Image (cartoon, rainbow, N blue to C red; front, top):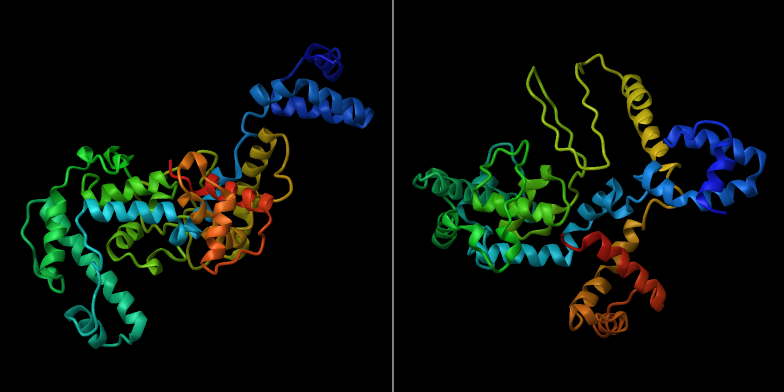
Length: 365
């Protein structure tokens, strides 16, 4: 059956309405009359459907909101991201061990003695490291703007302060290792940091390169400085803004998504109001997406996150095998076994599949 014959069967004497609504009406009628014939028609006109009718049907799971959520959840153990952060630290001349507090230093002592603040052990260390990173960022910005260090430099070692100030003059457009830092990132719509500030520009490029939402920029800058995995754990992939009073709302809108801005929430707003917004605003827009695809999402939306987490050591062993063009699943399995690391799904085909999923998801752009 060729395309012309299939269209004749599908539309008969009617006008050939090749939009999603017209096609779905026609194919539904044909399926009710002759399901087998309908299958043959769909097969014959598939090239037209893919090109002119359901043009969004090719979106991959790893480019969807699910893929974004998985990338954010795996960020702390993503080997590509970790190596890129190491490269940024090298360019900004941040030595290993910086920017970190130490027990009993001025920042830790201030926090421990703060009235009403009870911090101990790892919690104190984490909070102190973040405070020290913020002080580094402030001196970095001061130097970028041509100002001298201020009182908030307290707690930074001489080497850390020098790195904060010297790196403010770094011309990232001239960096050749890594060359991806040369690219000027898209301007962030709501970030308070100057787009040319080297630390911020590097963080913005990391976000673009690893397909991470821009509202996580602050935590990426903190992580670049502290190298603490805790700083990029449990990040919220969906941006939620609370706005008081009138003003302009800027929305950074990724492809294949939509935003819903809700105004006028007060102490009388109820859960029923929220459910009505979902029913009246969100669901119809999703239905439009489904109509454009020709169907609702079928089966699994994508690989299970826990399964991907378990397979990360295997994936890292795979990208470390000799030569990107000759990467070996067999060698990767052997490597993790030699290190005493096991992976439940050790058969070759399953290993290949999960490596492919992780590579689609995590490979930098």
